[in-house]
Length: 104
Image: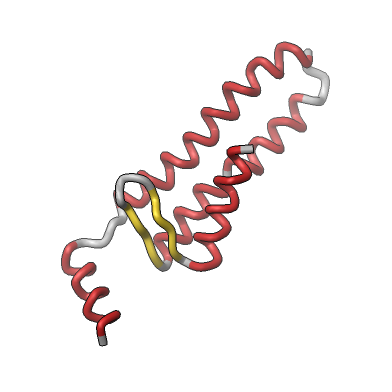
């Protein structure tokens, strides 16, 4: 369920080019779209993982590991987006230019 919510936030970021992440980080433009891709990746990965688990592996053992993998993969997607946002955050000069562009 949580992975679908994260996927929807990723689609929003990809389409509209704007996203707000934890720790008062907000991205716009291409940065937001790339972060949106990071947020969209966990759902398809989990779907593929679920399909592979259903093919010939002991179901009880697989389901016990699937819950842990689900949490880890979703957290990796979120942390990937946050890390990308942190590493590519606009410099102070870029932020001041963006603010003056919006004023004019």
